[in-house]
Length: 170
Image (cartoon, rainbow, N blue to C red; front, side, top):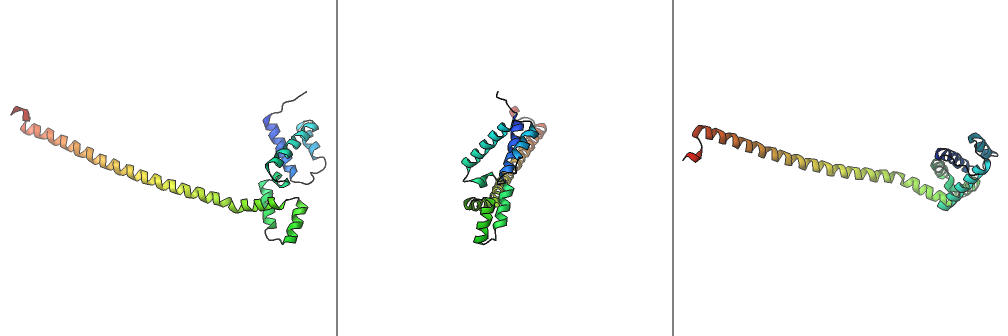
């Protein structure tokens, strides 16, 4: 019998499975504990775990893609000043591919560039908006002056008509 599980439950279990993928191998009995904690058959948890591994492998070059961004960052920091021999030992002991570590390092190095680029774009948009506001303000001021002049002319015409009368009588 096929049983449908809620998206929230699936997401919660998958998150726990992703955390387990960072360990090589996963602690003994951890999948059984997850299954018991959520009242899910162990075969379902194994199936979700296999799907998760298959998806992660298809998205990246290897095992390192299962790791969280925090774990990747810590790996980059930990290996930053290691010699080649120490680095090789670290990579082997943690099951990390050199290509993965290099790509993580590149991502870490470029992390703030995107933020700086967004800040530059926001500043240029702000400058454009300020120029637009200034132009609209100048146009509004010009129109207010023209309106005031037109109102003054109307008032003067009415006063002149009241004093000298209409020109149509001539």
